[in-house]
Length: 74
Image 1 (cartoon, rainbow, N blue to C red):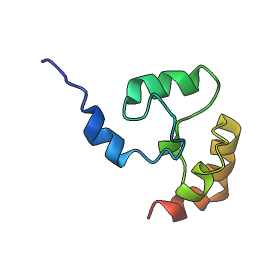
Image 2: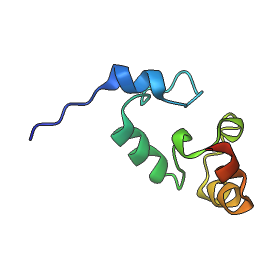
Image 3: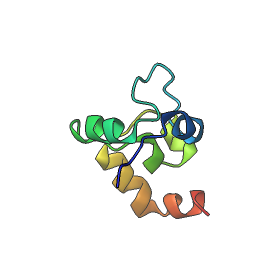
């Protein structure tokens, strides 16, 4: 089965607020980029935290453990 990346469609839904991002809409590149820096992509964070640009795994765990994560994704 051949898979096709739908970059333009994904770009419209991508929650990343970092506008000069060259990986926006290309999830495989975004995930690879952030994981190589011990980070997670914007789509793992509630909007109010995503805008801080702290994509660290530590921040993700902190938000998840605090319960804020569940409240933000209801």
